[in-house]
View 1 (tube, rainbow, N blue to C red):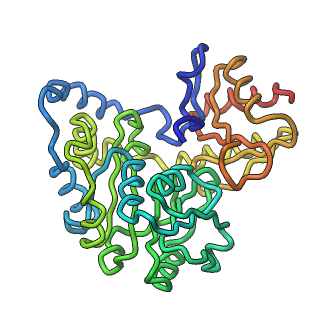
View 2 (tube, rainbow, N blue to C red):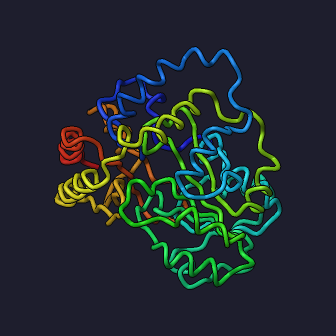
Length: 339
């Protein structure tokens, strides 16, 4: 799916006051990171490292795994495509509702694709699937499975490869599946994003972690110079200066709770429970696409129309918590909206 994601304000003529549509760090990249990137502009005159060697070593040390378990990619979406290609022609089960790119990438690589509910996944019911795709914490619902439950599932099905996308782990206090958990499990692949926590989605930077042989299988089709110089510079800086870029998760979740409570008091809107800093809002009437357009046109506020998430029933939007002041703008706008 090329279009239909969040952060599509470029499609509107009106300037935006606030962007609730993309699940990234509120307020954008930390100032220290932006200053560093400004100092690195001269590096774009040479090719980046062919296989992101420096960042790979830093990530491996950060996670306590070997560099041969880490593959740096052009965003988490780049990792998704490489995994789908490595299991070309497989039978894929996608735990829905969720991010469309798992199914899209699988179909490009001639997988037979099926959707399974979270309830069926919990019960281990995913038919003849040889690859299972799970977003955890999940986009768009904000739900999360525990590390213990997921590892038990992986261990019960050694013939199935589990691809767990942990791009939003930084927006949740539930401990994610650890990178070290992959070493003894050749059927486990963890996907990560470095752009969401640090507010740099325009740079496209992600990575995956797997057992060494599994990672080697995926890396066979990786292109050289797949990640640009500034993206690598950003990742290296964040790994070396964690105190300057740490996401304030606890404060963000507290603000999310306040925002959800305020929206729950508006008639016709039903926010979902969430373990993250983003959540769905069901609409009892009207159209999610019309609401999105109205919010941009009348208030300069961008939300995510959730109408194209397979598995949702009825109109819904997704919002990602911003600053307290911006959140108040959204609450006031939703009070004023009438379907």
